[in-house]
Image 1 (cartoon, rainbow, N blue to C red):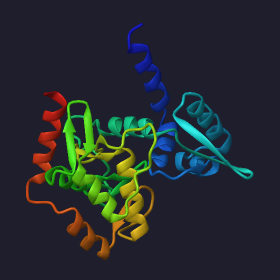
Image 2 (tube, one colour; image 1 turned 90 degrees about the vertical axis):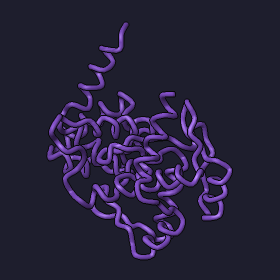
Image 3 (cartoon, rainbow, N blue to C red; image 1 turned 135 degrees about the horizontal axis):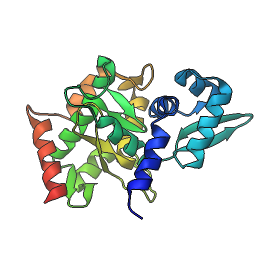
Length: 236
């Protein structure tokens, strides 16, 4: 069997406006209740429950039980990156990504930093040799491991890749996903360098601006150069 039926099934899942709204809300990385997701989608709780049951059954969402409450979240980073990649597609002549300037500047992509800030971080890591580009992906270099360790950034150990190149919804360049990307977002929030805003937005604080400029410097034109390196690494 070809991939057509699988793509058609995926399209039917995310193609419903209510389910798409729920998935979009959960891309902020926070687990939400069925009632909260019903409000996001503008549907009744019973309708939301039907949609959520399908999304869980198809492996798009996972359920967390906390006392009497059930919380829904994106199943894993693979699903989140699939959704971000789909969101990056746009019709010709239409500007990709959100229209809200705050969302374009900095936002969460599930558990890591996206938008202009996320692309800038990725470009800085590439430019200073903290990420090693390989034909099958990217990895932290010894200097990158040292940088994160010196910052007190703990990268969790599991079967998932430590670093992943995730195509940004609005910038159409790569930002850093994977366990390292999640660890950086956690560090930024813990240090108060960024704070969560409405929905998926992140706001860089004044101390955060100073710290990010110091630890993740970026020269003019580096983002484009870094993206070129990524493309060459994946397609050489």
